[in-house]
Image (cartoon, rainbow, N blue to C red; front, side):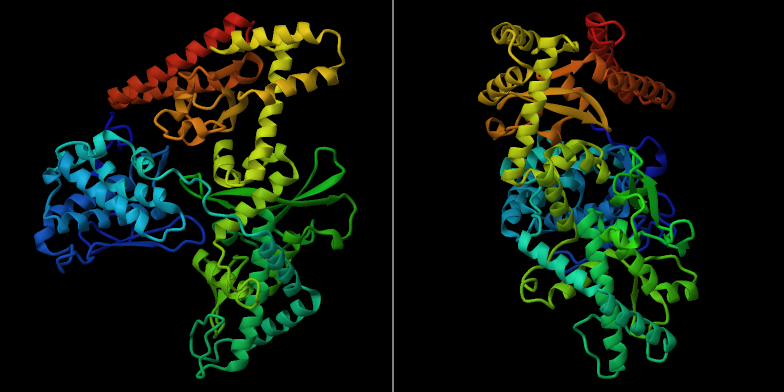
Amino acid sequence: MQTNQHQTQNQDCVRPIAVSNKSAWEDPKWILEETTPGQYPKTLDWAFEMPDGSLFTDISWGTLLESCRQVIWTFMNSCIGGRVSKANTTYAFYHSMTNFVRWMCSNDYIAFNELDDGAFRDFLDVARVDAYRRKNKRGPFNTLRNAVAFPIKLWQFHAVLETAGLPVPQCPPFQGRRANEVARETAERQDGTIPPIPDDVFRRAIELSLQATEEDIFAEAMQCAAAVFEHRGLSSKHYTKLKVVDESLPQDRIKAIIKINRVRDACVILIQALTGMRANEICAIKTSGIDPTTGLPDCIVVKPSLSGLDELFFIRSLLSKTLPTPAENDWLVGSRPVGSGPESLPIPVLAVCALERLYRPWREADGTNELVLAMGVDAVSGKPYSVPIMIYAVKDFFDTDDLLANHNPSTHQWRKTFAQYVIRSDSAMLPALKDHFKHLSIAMTEQGYVAADPELLQLLDDAAVQNTVAMIGSMMSGKSRHNGPLVDELQKTARRLGISLGNRSTEDRQADVEELVRSSSMRAWEVRFRGQPAGDCMFRPGTGKCTDGCPAKWMLRAPLWSAARPDLCWECKNLVVANNMHMAFWQDRLAKQTGAIEDAEAQGDIALAMLCRQRAAQCLAVLKKMEQSGDNGDVA
């Protein structure tokens, strides 16, 4: 195991003076700024209670506290998956740490150097029981994976602890296995276990949201907004939920705020449900007013379609999920034929327009540009809209209807529902959905958003069948060159089919090939990394490097995308690459690894340089096979 795979390469990870612009190392609380829109700063409280009644900041826990601070700080500043951890991720890791040190206290361990293989096995036994005992909607797999995250990172960062003169464990936990591997032994992975919103609930929510934004109701909300703004600041500064009634506050003010909030919540639901935008992306929408060119809020971008016959509407916001810091991005939210009137604007655009008008007085008065605001009863100023506020607001909105009252949707369920409606409409939309969701890979979209629905799985299998038919057809016609361990077998099949099908029509030939593919268990799945096609996986149940160690490998109908990565797929006999489609990925990867080798050597990181050389050699091997079978990647 390469223990330094994710370690940072500078000594700044060893006890700095300040950990953020609000906290120093010795502070009892670390306050971490959250760069993701819609999220509050995260507080790591070191003075939590231990099982023996003491506080973790008591002098008796001094060494362990210092060690934990070092591990957390190293985690915060280490590149994991190519990115420095955000505050929200660090906060989750902090909770894994608190659970682990509480277990240490319960079992009389006071320092990490007392932990051996037996200790880690004991902890795992307790964590397994706890994973099934907890009522966690994400399932025992995720609960157990989070529980073992801290001890695994503890070992990965042991060199940093040694540099700081702190105790380290006696051995790697769980025989050096990764968190996913440890969790999978106990609980089958439950990707996509956050369910979509049931169809009847979704339809009712959209119906009520549209009703709440109808012209007469919106006009009433605008009158309330004008009255509230005119008399803002005349009551004590309180904030209220829709259900809360405080007799000391002006009741007409509360009723007016409730009407304003209902329109706001309806608009937010329409945007989220009909675009699939994340909650933090909605919170990050900014507007400075109306764009004179379009007559729409300036967060709405209008572009012509490729044909020039339609107008495409985009919401401009900030993308945070896959980036170290938020960056501006556009989300497609609808279209209309060129020349259409304002009555044909897409519903999400109308919702944005309503929010821009509703809160315009507060933006102008306060000099803010937030599209969505959350107001206190005094209405002096708009409070920034956040994900927690959105969760409570949607629940309050649902509680006003008998059908919806029994449901408490998470913000992510809207994305699941949106994804499934898209795929049900057209299974070929999976790549487009991946781009719309700003996912790094198509595997993330498929496994996280559509793999839980049997109907959608059949649609995806149909798409894989057509991909396989197309590949065999290109081999029969000689339109493209393919390379891989299975190519000889596929080419023999293609030649036999070409002879047996003779001079039959194109439609009949394709139908016969499709029937043959459907009767077999082989499917061609496109493999993409970082948005580029890297090859096709000729997957059959029970095969594939990505399924090694998976107890249910014979039940899988597609590659285990969560385990797929270029260097693993390169070693797999299922990988087939075509010169004209996949050469660019391997050329770009070779250039990237070559640059990484130079950087690693300059920093004196021998292990990283060796890893990059190994990856570069893989790329060269793939490209050499392509060059041998075709001329510079051209179709032969």
